[in-house]
Picture 1: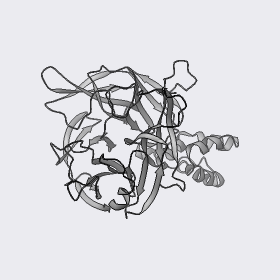
Picture 2: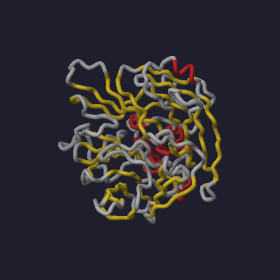
Picture 3: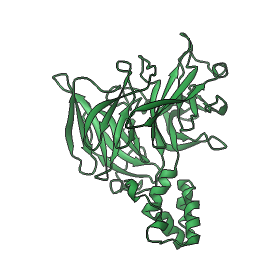
Length: 401
């Protein structure tokens, strides 16, 4: 889907098909959100050509921010037997900090719970603006920006999705999943979205990463960078990061920075793609019995080949300020959500945002319940793909459209 780095050359350097005026328009369009780009196509034929060109769409996608996804259920519903479920994104760098709907639908209570065992809709991955979703026994690829989607073969209930990625060589989306065989070993398989082929790629004595029950979205999804999937360390192996080479299709390990990994959930540690650099955040508690972490450390892998980790930010959280809004006994968590070091704190129906200096940048009280900062990020994309040829007017569209 994404062009190779060697092909990512501004169009005015590829044959000079833009004049000086169009170069300016090109730069302006790059900085607009996707909805505005679509509207600009209606201005004139020249803008339509610019805003529809594949090179422009790839460049535009690269300029979009990676935003955190949030799950919640709206409380203001007239019918008590019906719930309004939402998947939304939040940009802390906008003036109003408003949530933007990615996916929303109404259905009976308990239709979608972010980490429940019984559910009919689950988010399993996010890659290049495309979401991997399951509904009942069906598996879908869905671009919430274009509202185009495609179907994948359903996975058996014994299988658990471990990763979702774009395969650079074949220009195809692929799903990495595993299941435990009778001999006790964990077998990893790859499903090729384009051909629907499924094949064995590895057998492991134990899981290489943390895992939640079958059909559940992963709490700590992998990060795709340099053609490799990377999983954060787990409490049983805090010194290593599991890596899957998506080209050679082999599993290996690399050293992780010295961070504390919570043995209960393995969710206080998270990997991020910080503008092409692998980063790891780790939340820490200074004293036993605290409701939540007092700081978040943000490490950067400055030299990928030599595995040189550097702690770039140590973000001290205003615990007293956060505690003022903490009305529940449950432990709260802090998550880094941007390459600038912004941190989100989830307090059930309130979101608090802080920059890397510990200054408040957001305080959102939502009329909802069971709010949760999801493990995935969304980077919007208008780039078309042959696998996502269906739109929301199709008769067999997914139930969430």
